[in-house]
Length: 393
Image 1: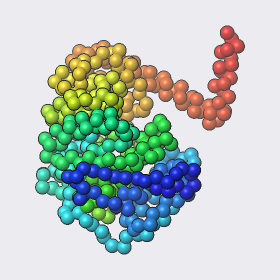
Image 2 (image 1 turned 90 degrees about the horizontal axis):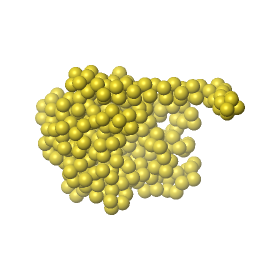
Image 3 (image 1 turned 180 degrees about the vertical axis):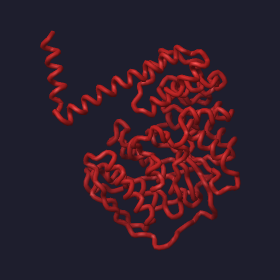
C-alpha cells in the first residue's frame, strides 16, 4: 500500500491462514481494493489505484458506499475515483456454491449461525459451512496476546464443531497499519468494519461464494455504522456475495436464540478485553458488553448455568458502574430487559436500568446543547456560562 497524498511510508498488507486452509486463500485484487478504498477516502488520498483487474460490480459498489459515508458524516470526506482495469468476464474459482460467515462466538454471530441452521437445510447453498475468525483487529501482536487468541480459538472451535462448520482463522495487519490514525476506534466503528470484513471474505474467493456478516443494530434502531444493511451488500463481486444478516432481531431475541444452544452457553465470547482470555474463560465480567450479556442471561434464568461468566449474579452497582450508554440501540438493549427482570422480581436491576437510561438522556441533552453552541455560537454560550458561574462565586 503506497500513500500518495499523506506523509506515511509504504506498507505491506498481508492475509494469512493455517496450513489446513492454505490452498483456499488467494491474492485477490478485489480484497486489496476493498481494504484500501475507504481508508484512502477517509484519510485524504485523491484516488485509489490498483494495477490488477477488479470486478466492475465491486468498483461500482464501493463508489456507492463512499456516497453513503459522505451523506452520513460529511466533514472533509470526498468521493475519490477508483482507477483500475476491469475484469471483462466472469471469474470464479470456487468449485461450487459455498456459504461462510464471520464467527467470533459472540451473541450476534452465534444467533446468526443458529438462525441459519433453523432456516436452511444443510444441503442448501446458503447453509453456512465455514466460519471465519480474524486475528489482528485489536492489535494482537505480541506473544502474550497471541496466546490469548489461541485460547479463544479453542472455545470458538467447540461451538463451530457442534454447528458442523469449519473454523478458518485469518491473520491480517490491514487495520493495525492505520491504527495510529484511529486512536478512539471511531473510524473502525462508523466507516471501516464492513469493508474490512468483506476484504477478508474476498481472500477466500477460491472457497466461498457467499459470506454473511451478523448485524449489530436491529431495524428499529438503525444508525449510520460501518457494517450496515444499506452498505454491506455493496462489497460483493460477481462471484462473492456479502450478506448482512438478522437486522430484524433485537439483542434479546438473539440471546434467546443462543439460549437454545448449550455449547454456546458454555463457550460464549462477548468481551474485547483480551487479557481476560484463558483456557476456561473468555470474558472479563466487568465491561459494558459483559454486563449487558450477563443481565440478559440473568433475566432469562441462564446466568447460573453458563461457565462463560464466573459471576453468577449482577448487582445494581455493577450496572451503574459499567453501563454508560452511547446510543439508542444500547438503550434499547437494556430497556427490553426491564419486563423479564420484573417478572423474576429483580426490581433492583429494573431501578438500575432506569437510572442508566436517565443518565444517558441527561448526557445526550448536554452533548446536544454543546454541539448546537459550537455550530451556531462558536462555543461562546458555554464559555460565557462558565464565566458567569466563576464570577458568581
